[in-house]
Length: 515
Image (tube, rainbow, N blue to C red; front, side, top):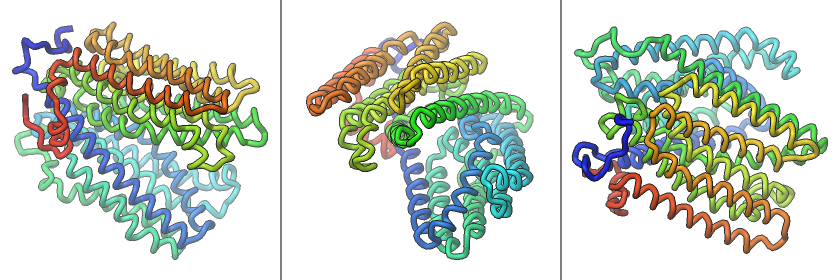
């Protein structure tokens, strides 16, 4: 336990604890800006293109890009997370930095080529047999270029996050999103093929710009780094295969649950409620996801050492992720009876319970994400086992609960599976002595909050007097946020010295180097 032991008052000078918080807050803020900029600009570009091109043109473009993204997600095998994880061990200036660039370039270029080739040769069968529209074959072949570029861009994003090159990350995301605004609406007036080419051109330009200005961005390896050091391509691939296995299990379990919901209700109303709940969960999980992504590269022994060890990083990132997840999920679940009808229409009022359970699922998932990321560094084998068991729990519970059920039971299956996997990750890390035992304490508020909020949401779904129970959910959320903060202060002593001014400085990336 010594390498990951939480520091006490005897070692405040040797372990700059506030540096960890500064990294998480400033890095998470920059990553949030980059994500919002890219997705926001991309959304505006797609909205304008849809209005200019019309439904048939935009529909064809959407089919092509959806296919390209799906192919890229499998061929890339989580290349973004992989690049993020290995960047922590080989930061800029490290003797293995050049080897890291070589390994990532080899794997990402190979994956990109694989994605492009697969989509090119399967375009005909996909268009004819799956989409039942042979006329889409040429468009899908054009999209093969995008499938490869998507992988390269994803690898670049993960690499920049892991290297903490947040200025470059924001620039790449703005270039990617802004480029779509500049060319996609214009391309829409010329048809879906031009739109696909425009999208690929923008992505290629974003990657090329980063490569072109690599030296100015301090991305090119210094002259004194060794080429033979760093991770091997096989090591990177092995990590990617575990990511791929998790993705396959996640998608398979999700597809099975969706198919059960569709079969349970031939009107597909429950399917609509299920989809709305999943969308609410994805939106509510985004803020705390920023914390886990920012911390990922510092969860290895080498990269975490300067922050007091990866155990300290895991602990602090769990505290922050839990507080942020509670701040988002608690109010979202409490206000769901009014939020869902307002966003989706009155016909979606029946999604109240499913959407509430979905954001609670996001609370459990995102608060436990730092620990899960730490486990991928410590034991890929145990990670694969837990991911497999997660998929089996989802499928088993879904098959059992969805007999005569619908969206509520489907989301409940995911919630139960995430609680199981989060507990399994904690047990695994503690048994491997890969995290401090205080991790159990700082994880407790999220679990207890999930249980209580689930119970209150279930009670509220069966009554017309929803305000009292919703207020109870808000009150409970405040209590658990306070509990998470108090437990975090006891486990990570210097959190108590943080002020609002310190947090603002961290957001602006002007936090002091140490405390």
